[in-house]
Length: 429
Ligand code: S3P
View 1 (cartoon, helix red, strand yellow):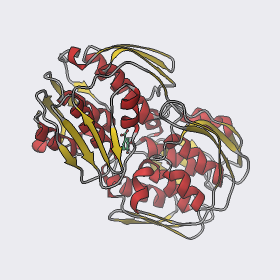
View 2 (cartoon, rainbow, N blue to C red):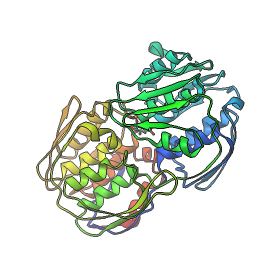
View 3 (cartoon, rainbow, N blue to C red):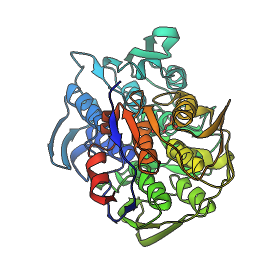
Protein backbone atom coordinates (compact mmCIF):
# COMPACT_ATOMS: atom_id res chain seq x y z
CA UNK A 1 0.00 0.00 0.00
CA UNK A 2 1.60 3.26 -1.11
CA UNK A 3 0.85 6.73 0.16
CA UNK A 4 2.24 10.20 0.73
CA UNK A 5 4.04 10.31 4.07
CA UNK A 6 3.20 13.47 6.03
CA UNK A 7 5.68 13.80 8.88
CA UNK A 8 5.07 15.64 12.16
CA UNK A 9 5.60 19.41 12.27
CA UNK A 10 7.40 21.20 15.08
CA UNK A 11 5.96 24.62 14.16
CA UNK A 12 4.01 26.41 11.41
CA UNK A 13 4.58 29.98 10.31
CA UNK A 14 3.46 32.10 7.41
CA UNK A 15 0.81 33.54 5.18
CA UNK A 16 -1.27 31.11 3.16
CA UNK A 17 -3.17 32.16 0.05
CA UNK A 18 -6.02 29.71 0.02
CA UNK A 19 -7.59 29.08 -3.42
CA UNK A 20 -10.94 30.51 -4.48
CA UNK A 21 -14.21 29.37 -2.98
CA UNK A 22 -15.53 26.24 -4.67
CA UNK A 23 -19.24 27.00 -4.25
CA UNK A 24 -18.84 30.57 -5.50
CA UNK A 25 -16.60 29.54 -8.43
CA UNK A 26 -19.20 27.00 -9.63
CA UNK A 27 -21.97 29.58 -9.43
CA UNK A 28 -19.99 32.34 -11.11
CA UNK A 29 -19.25 30.05 -14.07
CA UNK A 30 -22.78 28.70 -14.35
CA UNK A 31 -24.54 32.05 -13.97
CA UNK A 32 -22.02 33.57 -16.39
CA UNK A 33 -22.96 30.83 -18.87
CA UNK A 34 -26.68 31.51 -18.35
CA UNK A 35 -26.31 35.29 -18.61
CA UNK A 36 -26.20 37.58 -21.58
CA UNK A 37 -22.91 39.41 -22.08
CA UNK A 38 -19.43 38.96 -20.73
CA UNK A 39 -18.69 37.59 -17.27
CA UNK A 40 -15.24 37.92 -15.79
CA UNK A 41 -14.31 35.78 -12.79
CA UNK A 42 -11.19 36.51 -10.77
CA UNK A 43 -9.61 34.04 -8.33
CA UNK A 44 -11.62 31.20 -9.92
CA UNK A 45 -10.85 27.86 -8.27
CA UNK A 46 -9.11 25.76 -10.93
CA UNK A 47 -9.84 22.57 -8.96
CA UNK A 48 -11.22 19.46 -10.66
CA UNK A 49 -14.84 20.14 -9.60
CA UNK A 50 -15.06 23.66 -11.00
CA UNK A 51 -13.26 22.56 -14.17
CA UNK A 52 -16.08 20.00 -14.59
CA UNK A 53 -18.56 22.88 -14.48
CA UNK A 54 -16.62 24.75 -17.20
CA UNK A 55 -16.40 21.58 -19.33
CA UNK A 56 -20.19 21.05 -19.09
CA UNK A 57 -20.78 24.67 -20.15
CA UNK A 58 -18.54 24.17 -23.19
CA UNK A 59 -20.64 21.15 -24.24
CA UNK A 60 -23.71 23.41 -24.08
CA UNK A 61 -22.08 25.82 -26.49
CA UNK A 62 -20.96 28.46 -23.98
CA UNK A 63 -17.61 29.96 -24.95
CA UNK A 64 -15.13 30.73 -22.22
CA UNK A 65 -11.44 31.23 -21.78
CA UNK A 66 -9.32 30.56 -18.71
CA UNK A 67 -6.11 32.50 -18.10
CA UNK A 68 -4.55 31.36 -14.84
CA UNK A 69 -7.06 32.08 -12.11
CA UNK A 70 -9.24 34.29 -14.35
CA UNK A 71 -12.14 33.07 -16.47
CA UNK A 72 -13.98 35.03 -19.16
CA UNK A 73 -17.33 33.74 -20.36
CA UNK A 74 -19.26 35.04 -23.37
CA UNK A 75 -22.85 34.30 -22.38
CA UNK A 76 -25.71 34.41 -24.86
CA UNK A 77 -28.44 33.39 -22.44
CA UNK A 78 -29.81 29.93 -21.65
CA UNK A 79 -32.14 30.19 -24.66
CA UNK A 80 -29.07 29.90 -26.87
CA UNK A 81 -27.59 26.82 -25.20
CA UNK A 82 -26.90 24.04 -27.69
CA UNK A 83 -28.17 20.50 -27.22
CA UNK A 84 -25.01 18.64 -26.10
CA UNK A 85 -23.78 16.01 -28.56
CA UNK A 86 -22.34 13.90 -25.79
CA UNK A 87 -22.88 13.15 -22.12
CA UNK A 88 -22.19 15.96 -19.61
CA UNK A 89 -19.55 14.61 -17.22
CA UNK A 90 -19.74 16.21 -13.77
CA UNK A 91 -16.76 14.20 -12.48
CA UNK A 92 -16.81 14.13 -8.66
CA UNK A 93 -18.93 17.26 -8.32
CA UNK A 94 -22.35 17.11 -6.66
CA UNK A 95 -22.72 20.87 -7.10
CA UNK A 96 -22.24 20.57 -10.87
CA UNK A 97 -24.72 17.70 -11.12
CA UNK A 98 -27.48 19.34 -9.12
CA UNK A 99 -27.11 22.92 -10.34
CA UNK A 100 -27.01 21.84 -14.00
CA UNK A 101 -30.12 19.69 -13.51
CA UNK A 102 -31.87 22.84 -12.27
CA UNK A 103 -30.60 25.05 -15.08
CA UNK A 104 -31.35 22.42 -17.74
CA UNK A 105 -34.87 21.88 -16.40
CA UNK A 106 -35.70 25.34 -17.70
CA UNK A 107 -34.46 24.56 -21.20
CA UNK A 108 -36.10 22.39 -23.90
CA UNK A 109 -32.80 20.64 -24.74
CA UNK A 110 -32.23 16.95 -23.99
CA UNK A 111 -29.08 16.25 -22.01
CA UNK A 112 -27.60 13.29 -20.14
CA UNK A 113 -25.44 13.79 -17.05
CA UNK A 114 -23.07 11.33 -15.48
CA UNK A 115 -20.02 11.38 -13.22
CA UNK A 116 -17.46 9.31 -11.34
CA UNK A 117 -18.08 6.26 -9.14
CA UNK A 118 -18.82 8.44 -6.08
CA UNK A 119 -21.32 10.71 -7.83
CA UNK A 120 -23.09 7.69 -9.36
CA UNK A 121 -24.10 6.72 -5.80
CA UNK A 122 -25.19 10.12 -4.52
CA UNK A 123 -28.91 10.89 -4.13
CA UNK A 124 -30.47 13.00 -6.88
CA UNK A 125 -34.18 12.51 -6.23
CA UNK A 126 -34.03 15.41 -3.80
CA UNK A 127 -33.59 17.48 -6.99
CA UNK A 128 -35.25 15.39 -9.70
CA UNK A 129 -38.56 14.85 -7.83
CA UNK A 130 -39.25 18.57 -7.32
CA UNK A 131 -38.05 19.37 -10.85
CA UNK A 132 -40.49 16.77 -12.21
CA UNK A 133 -43.23 18.43 -10.17
CA UNK A 134 -42.43 21.67 -12.01
CA UNK A 135 -42.81 19.86 -15.34
CA UNK A 136 -39.33 18.57 -16.32
CA UNK A 137 -39.00 15.11 -17.85
CA UNK A 138 -36.18 13.18 -16.13
CA UNK A 139 -35.35 9.51 -16.33
CA UNK A 140 -32.58 7.54 -14.71
CA UNK A 141 -31.76 4.66 -12.41
CA UNK A 142 -33.98 4.11 -9.35
CA UNK A 143 -36.65 6.46 -10.57
CA UNK A 144 -34.23 9.31 -11.15
CA UNK A 145 -32.15 8.99 -7.98
CA UNK A 146 -28.75 8.33 -9.55
CA UNK A 147 -26.82 9.59 -12.54
CA UNK A 148 -26.66 8.78 -15.41
CA UNK A 149 -29.78 10.91 -15.73
CA UNK A 150 -31.41 12.24 -18.87
CA UNK A 151 -33.38 15.45 -18.67
CA UNK A 152 -35.57 17.32 -21.10
CA UNK A 153 -36.86 20.51 -19.60
CA UNK A 154 -39.00 23.43 -20.67
CA UNK A 155 -42.61 24.42 -20.04
CA UNK A 156 -42.09 24.57 -16.26
CA UNK A 157 -44.59 25.94 -13.79
CA UNK A 158 -43.54 27.80 -10.64
CA UNK A 159 -43.88 25.78 -7.44
CA UNK A 160 -43.74 26.37 -3.67
CA UNK A 161 -41.16 23.79 -2.53
CA UNK A 162 -40.49 22.71 1.04
CA UNK A 163 -37.30 20.70 1.20
CA UNK A 164 -36.65 17.91 3.69
CA UNK A 165 -32.94 18.67 4.03
CA UNK A 166 -31.09 21.96 4.24
CA UNK A 167 -29.16 21.72 0.98
CA UNK A 168 -27.85 24.66 -1.01
CA UNK A 169 -27.46 22.42 -4.05
CA UNK A 170 -31.16 21.51 -3.97
CA UNK A 171 -32.25 25.08 -3.22
CA UNK A 172 -30.05 26.44 -6.01
CA UNK A 173 -31.28 23.89 -8.56
CA UNK A 174 -34.90 24.78 -7.83
CA UNK A 175 -34.24 28.52 -8.00
CA UNK A 176 -32.40 28.18 -11.33
CA UNK A 177 -35.30 26.12 -12.70
CA UNK A 178 -37.66 28.76 -11.30
CA UNK A 179 -36.00 31.44 -13.43
CA UNK A 180 -37.31 29.65 -16.51
CA UNK A 181 -40.71 28.70 -15.04
CA UNK A 182 -44.07 30.37 -15.36
CA UNK A 183 -44.85 32.41 -12.21
CA UNK A 184 -43.24 32.29 -8.78
CA UNK A 185 -40.97 29.54 -7.41
CA UNK A 186 -40.16 29.47 -3.72
CA UNK A 187 -38.00 27.16 -1.63
CA UNK A 188 -38.42 26.77 2.12
CA UNK A 189 -35.70 24.83 3.95
CA UNK A 190 -35.66 23.27 7.44
CA UNK A 191 -32.51 25.32 8.22
CA UNK A 192 -30.78 28.01 6.21
CA UNK A 193 -28.11 26.59 3.87
CA UNK A 194 -25.39 28.59 2.13
CA UNK A 195 -26.92 31.48 0.18
CA UNK A 196 -24.31 32.13 -2.53
CA UNK A 197 -26.79 31.50 -5.35
CA UNK A 198 -29.24 34.05 -3.98
CA UNK A 199 -26.54 36.67 -3.53
CA UNK A 200 -25.05 36.07 -6.95
CA UNK A 201 -28.41 36.05 -8.75
CA UNK A 202 -29.01 39.51 -7.32
CA UNK A 203 -25.59 40.63 -8.57
CA UNK A 204 -26.53 39.33 -12.04
CA UNK A 205 -29.67 41.50 -11.95
CA UNK A 206 -32.32 38.99 -10.82
CA UNK A 207 -34.73 40.05 -8.06
CA UNK A 208 -34.64 37.47 -5.25
CA UNK A 209 -36.78 37.60 -2.11
CA UNK A 210 -35.10 36.16 0.99
CA UNK A 211 -37.10 35.86 4.21
CA UNK A 212 -35.72 33.61 6.92
CA UNK A 213 -35.70 30.03 5.60
CA UNK A 214 -37.66 30.99 2.45
CA UNK A 215 -36.30 32.17 -0.90
CA UNK A 216 -38.37 33.21 -3.91
CA UNK A 217 -37.77 34.06 -7.57
CA UNK A 218 -40.09 34.91 -10.44
CA UNK A 219 -39.76 33.33 -13.86
CA UNK A 220 -38.64 35.36 -16.82
CA UNK A 221 -35.83 37.41 -15.25
CA UNK A 222 -32.75 37.74 -17.43
CA UNK A 223 -29.21 37.52 -16.13
CA UNK A 224 -26.67 40.13 -17.17
CA UNK A 225 -22.96 39.24 -17.31
CA UNK A 226 -20.91 40.47 -14.33
CA UNK A 227 -17.48 40.64 -12.80
CA UNK A 228 -17.19 38.23 -9.87
CA UNK A 229 -14.24 38.39 -7.47
CA UNK A 230 -14.17 35.02 -5.72
CA UNK A 231 -12.98 35.10 -2.08
CA UNK A 232 -10.67 32.42 -0.67
CA UNK A 233 -12.56 29.30 0.39
CA UNK A 234 -13.25 29.15 4.14
CA UNK A 235 -13.65 25.37 3.77
CA UNK A 236 -10.03 25.18 2.54
CA UNK A 237 -8.88 27.72 5.14
CA UNK A 238 -10.37 25.39 7.78
CA UNK A 239 -7.41 22.98 7.46
CA UNK A 240 -5.02 25.79 8.38
CA UNK A 241 -7.24 27.07 11.20
CA UNK A 242 -7.03 23.64 12.84
CA UNK A 243 -3.33 23.22 12.05
CA UNK A 244 -2.47 26.69 13.40
CA UNK A 245 -4.49 26.05 16.56
CA UNK A 246 -2.83 22.72 17.37
CA UNK A 247 0.69 22.89 15.91
CA UNK A 248 2.00 24.30 19.18
CA UNK A 249 4.20 27.08 17.76
CA UNK A 250 3.91 29.84 15.17
CA UNK A 251 1.01 31.69 13.56
CA UNK A 252 -0.80 31.39 10.23
CA UNK A 253 -2.37 34.31 8.38
CA UNK A 254 -5.06 33.64 5.76
CA UNK A 255 -5.95 36.70 3.66
CA UNK A 256 -9.23 37.41 1.83
CA UNK A 257 -11.19 34.45 3.19
CA UNK A 258 -14.95 34.43 2.48
CA UNK A 259 -16.92 35.08 5.67
CA UNK A 260 -20.47 34.70 4.40
CA UNK A 261 -22.41 34.00 7.64
CA UNK A 262 -23.92 30.82 6.15
CA UNK A 263 -20.38 29.39 6.00
CA UNK A 264 -18.70 30.55 9.21
CA UNK A 265 -19.81 27.79 11.57
CA UNK A 266 -16.18 26.60 11.65
CA UNK A 267 -15.08 29.91 13.21
CA UNK A 268 -17.84 29.77 15.83
CA UNK A 269 -17.09 26.18 16.80
CA UNK A 270 -13.29 26.48 16.89
CA UNK A 271 -13.57 29.60 19.03
CA UNK A 272 -16.01 27.81 21.33
CA UNK A 273 -13.38 25.06 21.63
CA UNK A 274 -10.88 27.71 22.77
CA UNK A 275 -9.15 28.59 19.47
CA UNK A 276 -7.34 31.90 19.09
CA UNK A 277 -8.63 33.14 15.73
CA UNK A 278 -8.75 36.81 14.84
CA UNK A 279 -10.92 38.19 12.05
CA UNK A 280 -9.14 41.23 10.60
CA UNK A 281 -9.60 43.68 7.71
CA UNK A 282 -13.26 42.76 7.18
CA UNK A 283 -14.86 44.09 4.00
CA UNK A 284 -17.90 43.33 1.88
CA UNK A 285 -17.50 44.17 -1.80
CA UNK A 286 -20.59 43.26 -3.87
CA UNK A 287 -22.31 40.48 -2.07
CA UNK A 288 -19.72 38.25 -0.40
CA UNK A 289 -17.80 39.42 2.68
CA UNK A 290 -14.15 38.58 3.20
CA UNK A 291 -11.54 39.05 5.91
CA UNK A 292 -8.01 38.12 6.93
CA UNK A 293 -7.96 35.31 9.48
CA UNK A 294 -5.06 34.97 11.92
CA UNK A 295 -4.70 31.81 13.98
CA UNK A 296 -2.36 31.17 16.88
CA UNK A 297 -1.83 28.11 19.07
CA UNK A 298 -4.37 27.39 21.79
CA UNK A 299 -5.50 24.54 24.04
CA UNK A 300 -8.72 23.22 22.56
CA UNK A 301 -11.47 21.53 24.53
CA UNK A 302 -14.41 19.42 23.40
CA UNK A 303 -17.85 20.77 22.53
CA UNK A 304 -21.25 19.79 21.18
CA UNK A 305 -21.99 20.55 17.54
CA UNK A 306 -25.64 20.08 16.55
CA UNK A 307 -28.79 21.72 15.20
CA UNK A 308 -28.90 24.90 13.13
CA UNK A 309 -25.13 25.27 12.94
CA UNK A 310 -24.65 22.00 11.02
CA UNK A 311 -25.33 23.38 7.49
CA UNK A 312 -22.94 26.26 8.31
CA UNK A 313 -20.01 23.84 8.76
CA UNK A 314 -21.08 20.66 7.00
CA UNK A 315 -17.95 20.43 4.82
CA UNK A 316 -15.65 21.12 7.77
CA UNK A 317 -16.69 18.12 9.87
CA UNK A 318 -13.74 15.92 8.78
CA UNK A 319 -11.15 18.50 9.89
CA UNK A 320 -13.21 19.42 12.97
CA UNK A 321 -13.10 15.73 13.88
CA UNK A 322 -9.29 15.87 13.67
CA UNK A 323 -9.38 18.92 15.98
CA UNK A 324 -11.74 17.12 18.38
CA UNK A 325 -9.47 14.08 18.53
CA UNK A 326 -6.72 16.37 19.89
CA UNK A 327 -8.94 18.50 22.15
CA UNK A 328 -9.39 17.96 25.86
CA UNK A 329 -12.57 16.06 26.73
CA UNK A 330 -15.42 14.90 24.56
CA UNK A 331 -16.88 16.32 21.35
CA UNK A 332 -20.27 15.18 20.09
CA UNK A 333 -21.47 15.95 16.57
CA UNK A 334 -25.18 15.29 15.87
CA UNK A 335 -27.88 16.17 13.32
CA UNK A 336 -25.33 15.62 10.57
CA UNK A 337 -26.74 12.54 8.78
CA UNK A 338 -26.19 14.45 5.51
CA UNK A 339 -22.51 13.55 5.92
CA UNK A 340 -23.44 10.02 4.87
CA UNK A 341 -24.22 11.21 1.31
CA UNK A 342 -21.22 13.43 0.65
CA UNK A 343 -18.22 12.45 -1.55
CA UNK A 344 -17.96 9.46 0.82
CA UNK A 345 -20.05 8.45 3.84
CA UNK A 346 -18.06 10.89 5.94
CA UNK A 347 -19.39 9.59 9.26
CA UNK A 348 -18.00 6.17 8.53
CA UNK A 349 -14.84 7.19 6.67
CA UNK A 350 -13.88 9.82 9.25
CA UNK A 351 -14.51 7.44 12.16
CA UNK A 352 -12.56 4.58 10.53
CA UNK A 353 -9.73 6.85 9.41
CA UNK A 354 -9.25 8.56 12.77
CA UNK A 355 -9.46 5.27 14.66
CA UNK A 356 -6.68 3.94 12.43
CA UNK A 357 -4.50 6.85 13.58
CA UNK A 358 -5.11 6.05 17.25
CA UNK A 359 -8.07 8.33 18.03
CA UNK A 360 -11.00 7.41 20.26
CA UNK A 361 -14.02 7.80 17.95
CA UNK A 362 -17.51 6.36 18.01
CA UNK A 363 -19.83 6.45 15.00
CA UNK A 364 -23.37 7.73 15.71
CA UNK A 365 -26.27 7.41 13.24
CA UNK A 366 -26.15 11.16 12.59
CA UNK A 367 -22.67 12.15 13.74
CA UNK A 368 -19.63 11.25 15.82
CA UNK A 369 -18.54 11.06 19.43
CA UNK A 370 -14.83 11.79 19.89
CA UNK A 371 -12.77 11.68 23.07
CA UNK A 372 -9.67 13.80 22.66
CA UNK A 373 -6.08 12.76 23.39
CA UNK A 374 -2.87 14.76 23.84
CA UNK A 375 -1.26 13.28 20.70
CA UNK A 376 -2.27 10.76 18.04
CA UNK A 377 0.35 8.12 17.24
CA UNK A 378 -0.30 8.30 13.46
CA UNK A 379 -0.23 5.50 10.90
CA UNK A 380 -2.02 5.07 7.56
CA UNK A 381 -5.24 6.64 6.34
CA UNK A 382 -7.18 6.41 3.09
CA UNK A 383 -8.95 9.27 1.31
CA UNK A 384 -11.29 6.96 -0.64
CA UNK A 385 -11.06 9.65 -3.33
CA UNK A 386 -12.57 12.27 -0.97
CA UNK A 387 -10.63 15.55 -1.09
CA UNK A 388 -11.56 16.69 2.39
CA UNK A 389 -10.46 13.39 3.90
CA UNK A 390 -7.11 13.55 2.10
CA UNK A 391 -6.39 17.02 3.51
CA UNK A 392 -7.69 16.14 6.98
CA UNK A 393 -5.33 13.15 7.15
CA UNK A 394 -2.41 15.31 6.02
CA UNK A 395 -3.10 17.76 8.86
CA UNK A 396 -3.47 14.83 11.26
CA UNK A 397 -0.03 13.67 10.09
CA UNK A 398 1.55 17.05 10.89
CA UNK A 399 0.00 16.92 14.35
CA UNK A 400 0.85 13.26 15.02
CA UNK A 401 3.76 11.57 16.79
CA UNK A 402 5.01 9.44 13.92
CA UNK A 403 3.36 10.91 10.82
CA UNK A 404 0.57 9.69 8.59
CA UNK A 405 0.85 7.94 5.22
CA UNK A 406 -2.09 9.29 3.24
CA UNK A 407 -3.35 6.98 0.57
CA UNK A 408 -5.09 8.89 -2.24
CA UNK A 409 -3.64 12.31 -1.43
CA UNK A 410 -4.19 13.36 -5.07
CA UNK A 411 -7.93 13.72 -4.33
CA UNK A 412 -7.07 17.12 -2.78
CA UNK A 413 -6.99 18.50 -6.35
CA UNK A 414 -10.80 18.57 -6.32
CA UNK A 415 -10.76 21.73 -4.20
CA UNK A 416 -7.10 22.58 -3.39
CA UNK A 417 -4.70 21.60 -6.19
CA UNK A 418 -1.44 22.72 -4.47
CA UNK A 419 -2.31 21.70 -0.94
CA UNK A 420 0.90 19.81 -0.11
CA UNK A 421 3.12 22.47 -1.69
CA UNK A 422 1.38 25.17 0.34
CA UNK A 423 1.80 23.12 3.52
CA UNK A 424 5.50 22.74 2.79
CA UNK A 425 5.91 26.51 2.69
CA UNK A 426 4.66 27.02 6.24
CA UNK A 427 5.67 23.86 8.06
CA UNK A 428 8.87 23.61 10.10
CA UNK A 429 10.04 20.11 10.96
C1 S3P B 1 -22.53 23.01 -1.74
C2 S3P B 1 -23.49 22.68 -0.83
C3 S3P B 1 -23.30 21.66 0.20
C4 S3P B 1 -21.84 21.33 0.39
C5 S3P B 1 -21.12 21.13 -0.91
C6 S3P B 1 -21.20 22.39 -1.75
C7 S3P B 1 -22.85 24.03 -2.76
O1 S3P B 1 -23.96 20.48 -0.17
O2 S3P B 1 -21.71 20.17 1.19
O3 S3P B 1 -19.78 20.80 -0.71
O4 S3P B 1 -21.92 24.55 -3.42
O5 S3P B 1 -24.03 24.35 -2.93
P1 S3P B 1 -25.55 20.27 0.01
O6 S3P B 1 -26.25 21.21 -0.87
O7 S3P B 1 -25.79 18.85 -0.41
O8 S3P B 1 -25.86 20.50 1.43
